[in-house]
Length: 49
Image (cartoon, rainbow, N blue to C red; front, side):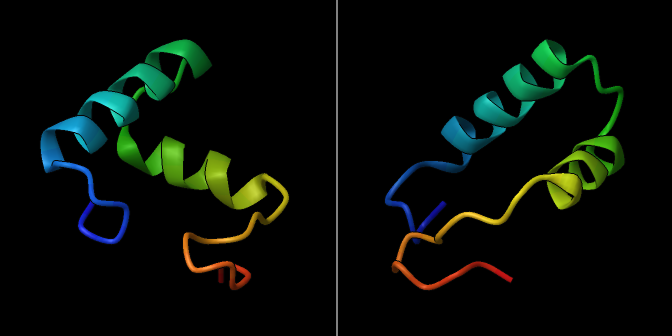
């Protein structure tokens, strides 16, 4: 949240909305889903790990 200059509450809300829209039941499912997606650049412009 700090790296993107957002509050923890904002990140939590986005996480919850993503889980609802994707039909995911928990954070582990969300992490698994994200890991399966193509990589995007991080906030610094460097490729994310």
